[in-house]
Length: 79
Picture 1 (tube, rainbow, N blue to C red):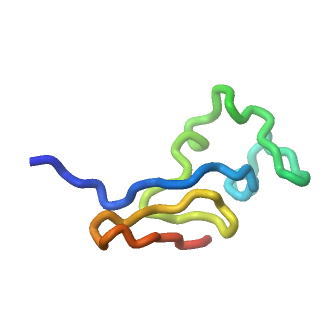
Picture 2 (tube, rainbow, N blue to C red; picture 1 turned 180 degrees about the horizontal axis):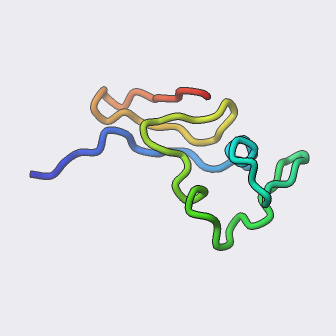
């Protein structure tokens, strides 16, 4: 019997930098827009795992989740 994952990740990174600020990352450069100096290169594991499950995101993040158990309700809980 296959297990159906509850949350499906949707959207894309808008490079807001909030996840980097939260981690105090040395590769983050403040600015408009904020920039990751190694985005698209080999990044630390914590970057590849973001956003995490259960769905916790930052205000303004380009990612969101669909709750597949609740008729694809959009879930976006902000930190």
